[in-house]
Image (cartoon, one colour):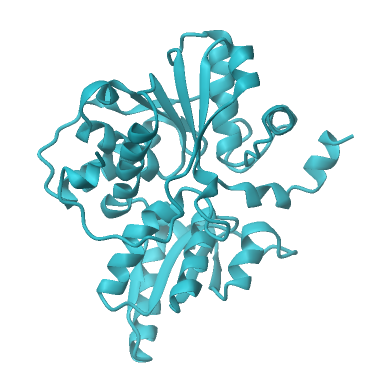
Length: 335
């Protein structure tokens, strides 16, 4: 039984290619002495592959229902979310405006190249403009588009709000329908919406699935800020549909200390690990999110084989296009 058949979820689109498969990672399972599985949300669709399209199934459907002609969103220069939004906007015949944090790349590579191919209108912002001036920029863009006879719909960074998080409450139910309950589900933690949705799905679940630990591996912020992001989105999701639910701090687990050199910065050890996983399991992890998170999970289990239980699922949230922006870094690894 899916979550959405038990409670009143809003209508959503069907652009994500679902359900995505769950695969056992045989060699890594043997090495770690546990049963390690991978949820292949990197296979939700080539153009919008990754976790963002599950959120956009709800958000873009809401935008269409409200008569929007332009999707506006924001993120880093190589944002997976922005690329997925640009792709879906092109599919739906909508205008797309992206506010990207950082300088315009000297070369159009990876997600940034795809943003441009999909026809997104891109504005590159300084950190100050991004974090302090976003509200004003949104108002200016909204006024301009309304003046042209259009209507905007703003999607927050990562699609992480109460409505978007419902996509991962659905995903938890999908996982429960595909396999026996896992002791833990681990996921990269960025803007918090994916983890919040999984926790919501757990709170709505029945039976042993309700005992599954949801662990976010911090790849962006510190532990305190990561916790607050999940808490904020989870509470917004509960309020969004007036779910008769409550949650405890213990429902939000953050695995810290694996941020490494910083957000979107890769060490040689991390890239060596991506190479190991590619060659042993034919799985492509990305250097920004899934690579750091999987590496953190792996190192933790190596230190304590029982850290996450005997049956562990890692949620592959995509990001593979990020592999193609690392040129000098790969030259150091592929020698």
